[in-house]
Amino acid sequence: MYREEIKVLDCTIRDGGLMNAWHFSDEYVKAVYDACVESGIDYMEIGYKSSEKAYSREEVGCWKFSDEKDIERIVGENNTSLKLSAMVDIGRIEPDDILPASDSLLDMIRVAAYVHQIDKAIWLADHCVEKGYEVSINLMAVSNVLERDLEEALEDVGKSKLPIFYLVDSFGSLYCEQVEGLIKKYQEFLPKKTIGVHMHNNMQLAFSNTITGIIQNANMLDATFLGIGRGAGNCPLELLLSFLKNPKYKIRPILGVIQEYMLDMQKEIDWGYHIPYLITGSMNQHPRSAMKWMNSEEKDDFAAFFSQMNEKGDL
Amino acid sequence: MYREEIKVLDCTIRDGGLMNAWHFSDEYVKAVYDACVESGIDYMEIGYKSSEKAYSREEVGCWKFSDEKDIERIVGENNTSLKLSAMVDIGRIEPDDILPASDSLLDMIRVAAYVHQIDKAIWLADHCVEKGYEVSINLMAVSNVLERDLEEALEDVGKSKLPIFYLVDSFGSLYCEQVEGLIKKYQEFLPKKTIGVHMHNNMQLAFSNTITGIIQNANMLDATFLGIGRGAGNCPLELLLSFLKNPKYKIRPILGVIQEYMLDMQKEIDWGYHIPYLITGSMNQHPRSAMKWMNSEEKDDFAAFFSQMNEKGDL
View 1 (cartoon, each protein chain N blue to C red):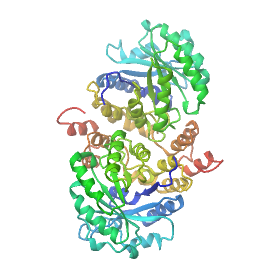
View 2 (view 1 turned 120 degrees about the horizontal axis):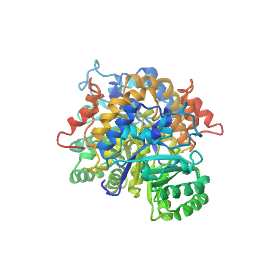
View 3 (view 1 turned 60 degrees about the vertical axis):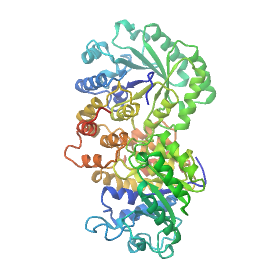
View 4 (view 1 turned 180 degrees about the vertical axis):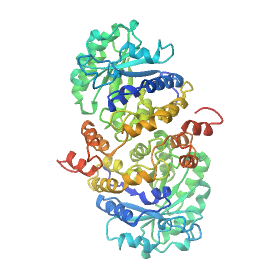
């Protein structure tokens, strides 16, 4: 599967950090960075950019803020072909917190937004375009958005300067036919924009849904080392690279980081396919209740979680 | 996704037994059987039928032979709607070892065969049809079969009495477009036969490939509790039932067995997605070298396994 336009974005630190409040060692972040460079990955999302007022540094690690000095500590001047990205959440960042791109090690800003925040997201995205960044909007939880609300949002996005728009399966609840239908709709409303895909693995469909995205001409593909990410995690980068067959991508450096760091990490951070994530995913629910269950003493009582989620009937 | 013709076949004991030489406790086999009955599963494949000459009882458990007395110990007279199946391998069974269906607790015999064995498989399948069984041929390793050999085999199968023919992804190497193409070919050559799918999870595609099968009108679907099976395992039954939305299937009994037996079992038997299985799957290789690696002291040195498998170049 070779298509020159395809770009791969690693979001190991940003999305994986949702599982450990971004308390990664510098050594690990550097290993991920080095492997991304060596593997020919196009973008690495190193964290969120957030306002200091939005989170306490006692609770979250530095990649929730992604200050320039922290990024520089890992990447130096980043004289590589790897571009760096950070994600921003609407309402958790002040526009002035974002430096002009010429003063930043970041090349891309991705704006995460729910559909009711789309106007704010477009404003912020255009603001970042003007500051010189590559920019995307990642519309979250689209599996719960009504058709008319989605179309109104897409019409507004279509009028913006934004170059990239993402299909995000926040709940890990989309099946291949839904992915295909949504991408076709995005392309219909946004014919000149690049479409990206960010999939979750609640139903072991993150990789296959990413392939469906590729078949439908999505050209920005999110993935993480060994699929680390919130709850059931993301599309595993090693699987994606093995599929793409693009000679510019190398899988071996990714395997090196997985064996050196992530097998031990798996003993501390329990991401991946677990029954509670399947239950919320198949019910098109946010995984927060499954994550809470996975952190409780009853975590292995799947039937009880199933009953709690199904008070109204049987799955 | 509701289609009346769809039948689900659980092969937890038969395929899972490839990982522990069928040394399951009677209590566990009974729990799987009871859950299959309660969940409305259509078929349970309880093991292989093999000749006593083919294997030593000191090495393999009783489900490699599936004697009537062993089956009866678990299911009694099986006065339920669950049908029982056993698999036979060409060359490991004598036709006379198979009782007439009227004298057996088994309802179905599935004949596993490589393409070069297809004539023997058709003979044995027809023999089992005559003895009163439902019968399938499961053509293994089709990802390595040349087009002309496959078409010749399908022509011969088309002339047989056999009612069911299976697409088997033995190496876990098929992507959705290949699954779609193969099922279309099977249907073209076998328009009157039911098509089944048996997928492996080397690239986390067992469930999504099963969905592709459903979309393409495959109506016999193999799955196992928590995906247990050889190497990376099979399509997880709990995912398949959550997708099918058929009111006759219940997911809760499956979850009960998973939490009561299989979380502990996972500590002993290491099936599921692991990097060596991805490597053989993406290279369209039999998983035996990955399984051997997973049982070696170097099991976590993925880069070394990758190098060993890629002496000729880079993936």
